[in-house]
Length: 353
Image (cartoon, rainbow, N blue to C red; front, side, top):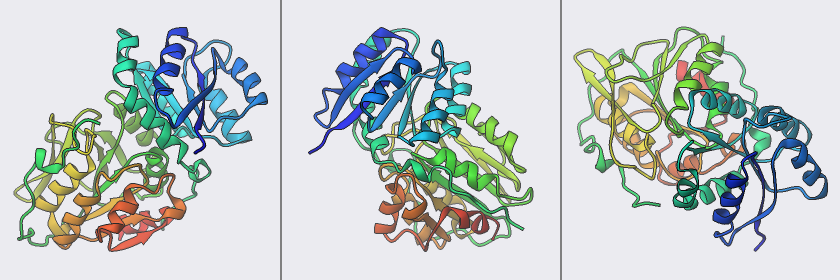
C-alpha cells in the first residue's frame, strides 16, 4: 500500500516536530519534508511533490494564502490548514478555505505540544480525509437563478415518531456538509435570490471559525447569512449556520420556527452534527422541510436524512461528480434517504423550488 506523502509548512519548529511525530504514528502516512515558510517549501516541492500539504497561514516571507493560491493555480493539491484558535486566525483561515483548502486543524496558543499529541488520531484522519479529496472540484460553477465513542442523534434528541407535522405554507431547508462544504455552500448560497426559504445549515467546522465563515458568506450573498444564536427565528431570506462546538436543532413555536443552540456530546464524532439537525427538522417540520446533504467525509447526516425522508420531506444528495469527497452523500444514498441525487449546480433550484 502506498503511503500518503505529507509536506508540513509551519514557522514553528515545535509544531513541525510534533506534527511529524504524531502523523507518522499512522502507518498510512509518511512525512516527506517540513519547511519553515513557503519559500523553503517551494524548494522541496521542486524535488518531490506530496499528496497532502499541511499549511500554517501566518508565516514570514510569504503568507499561507498566497502560497495556497499559487499551489491551486499551478498544481491543485489537497491542503490542510493548521491555524490558531484566534479571531484573526479564523478570518485568515476562511480566506484560505475560499482559496481551496479542504480541512482545518486548529491549534491552541498554549499547551500546544500536549494538544497535538492528544489529538494525533484526529489529525491523521484529517490528512487521510484530505488525501481522498478531488480538489479540482472545489470551484464548480453554479448558474444564478432566474474516535471517541460514535454516538448517534439519540444522545441529543429523541426520534420524530410516526406522525409528521401537518403541512403548512412555511417551508424551510436544512443542509448538512463537511469536507469541501465551504466552497459548495458558497456556490449554492451565492446563486440564491433574496427571497427564498429560511435555511438551517451544519458545516463541520471548529469553534470560532463559523462566525467568520458566516460573515464572509453574508458579504457575498443576496440573502442574509449569520452564525446562529439560541432562539433565532428561521425566516425567508436568512441562512443560519450552526456555531462550531455546539449542536443546532430546529424547534417550532406556534406558527414560527426557531433554533436551539445547545451543548451536548459528540454525535458521529461531530459537534455540530448533521444528524442532530436533520432529526430535529424531521420532528418539528416534517414534510414542510427539504433536506440536502452535500460533500463530506464520513456518514454524519445519512440517518438524519433518512428520518426526514420517512416523514415525507423532499430529500436531496449531491452527486459524486461534483463532490470534493463523496462520503456523506454516498452513505445517505445507500440508506435510501435521498429522493433525488443532483449535481451541485442544480441545488439552488431545489431550494427555491
